Length: 411
View 1: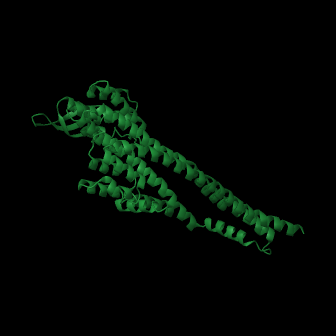
View 2: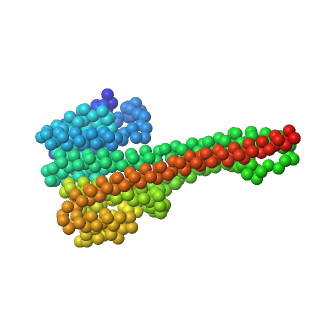
View 3: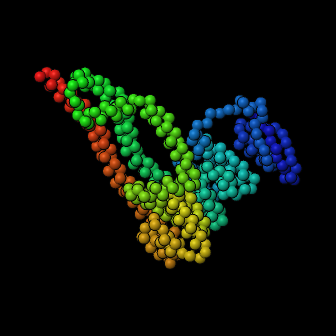
């Protein structure tokens, strides 16, 4: 069992230093808190630092959405049944099969045992619990309806995950077809066409002139075998993709990229409807949990997934904070449909905003399904036609001249 050096202070504020043995750092923190010590610094001793190296692949330490939904539903059931929060969390920690979630819950249990609120403890793990999750839990604690809020939260997570899954699965087939098309084209042009080109040259003996489309095809094939082409695709293109991905992760780059996507008609439809569906679902959940309208807007804005629409919502929250109605501010938006504005206005007048906006979410989730299915049904045959057309052009450019030259030679 590895040793950890620690610096901590007790309830009287006195600093204590020492070494504690534990399975890992989380277990060391838990052990210190059980001794009524508040950790300041905890690190592996030098003799163990080289022995405790673990391979960590991307995503290994991330809690899966499925595991988080199950945890949320089970916690809601236990709290609703009257099981104390501390006991509920301990039970869920022991029975979960997710190692990343178990590690997080070990720290949360230790925090609760030390007197920390659940929402405050969850906020220490932003990689697992989103701002939406934390705000809803905080509202549930304040209103004494934690079980109800957790149930709504689990339902909202399931809907959001289902929406993302449908979009990814619908785009999977076109992506595969596109990738196959590119790979097939490269293989044909770099391995097959050059060999057939030699056959054409030997048949023509340099006398018969090949059709222009065949000459263009052979020219492209020749260029693709040059070092500059190989350098471009092996070094320059991957480097450009890496730099582009880094750029769109910056605030300025992300905004410009999302602005560009909203100018492409087919993509704009899916992005807009997805944003409206996600906004409506999350906003309704936050409002029904008792979160203030300004906090609900700001929290929802960060979960939209598009920087342009996110900026519009943040501007709306500032106006709402100044005393304006949300429906009136959203009417200035270029991306929220009039029907959403009208239904939101009705909700504000009748005091049923959360109920009405939830209906909007259900409507637009169905709209997203239909839009994605429609675009996918168009992309699939187009990609197949492109792949077939590419192979057909190569076949005509190569075998047509071969047939003509063979006839010329035999004559």
